[in-house]
Length: 143
Image (tube, rainbow, N blue to C red; front, side, top):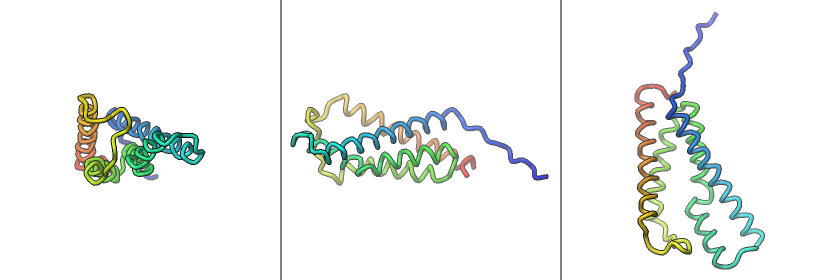
């Protein structure tokens, strides 16, 4: 008889992070699909088309939402691959505004306190998630 491997329980943080990024990724892919459908059907005006193309460029045509889903699943399955995925997401999100000349969407000209607060909160959460996954990896909980 084979000795049973002890099952490691997922912490509440693994559950919360996985559910958050899975939902974030699914909603992002749904937004990309909606934009592609609207662009294909041609039912939008020129101003809406420009903002839709900006959304597609900002999500790298759906790659970032798909990476959110991949990161969430790999973290939930406690795989070592979760760390490179989340650090890659952080790197891309930090460098995307530097290398792209994306215009701001209509109604969002300039920077507001709410936008800056949202960026700080978003990057702060992602940095905390990367640190948490790094610690999980160092303690050997990720396989």
